[in-house]
Length: 344
Image (cartoon, rainbow, N blue to C red):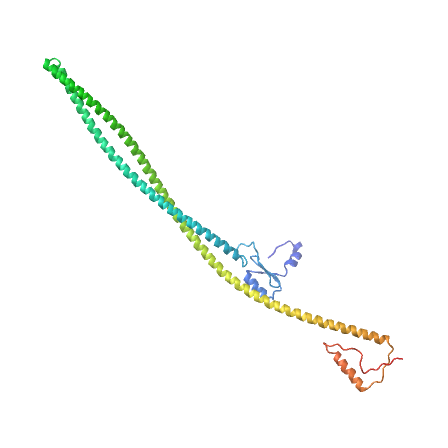
């Protein structure tokens, strides 16, 4: 699985010769138990099971490992809380938009009523203008008739002069009435122009309100879609958290098994330590016995000694002590009580 230059092949085999590769951490643990934790096992995600059972998680792998799922679960819970807060602010914004739409609709209704009232006033003014124009036309016709009568009476007698005077007075009154009607007509025309201007402004205001209502409705629809998306994301996050909880329970079970297995191994190691301590103690006793034998041998060599008479009882004593010296757990001195030494 590793391609290197032939020059470095020996170094790579030295470094990776005792390394096994497993597909995942669970398979690596099973393989390590079968091999009694004597080899280093590496997973495809980068986790390492060292000889002896120690595990090391690879922190830079793409997926969450056994030791990194708790952190991912905390991140998902934080994102879920942020989505819930965003959803709350979206609901508040949607409620505010509903209130604004209601206010805009109320303003539009009032503007329409005002527009209808202005249209009625305009219609009334137009009717009054038609009446004034008719009255003006009638006054002009009467004035023309009076002028004609004045021209006819101008060649007459005093009666005609009187009639002329009367006609002149009527003409003056007619001119005065015509001037008043003209002023009233001009005022009505000015008022009609103001009403038309106000009507145009009201129509512009209604158009703006319609555009604002359409914009608010579109924004409300966008918020509704956003709220649905947030709800879907929150549901997916809850499912991910549930999956992580199950994986965390599985990891906890595996961790408990590993701890139990490590405890049993520690117990076996402690037994080995006790056996080694007992062996060292026996070794120390044997070393002391050897020193005693060497001291006794030097003492025999330094002091002049000769053997005394030998008896079967003494022979039995030495034989028994030699048979005891052959036991692995006790050390007996070399001198025998069956020997009698004399000096001189």
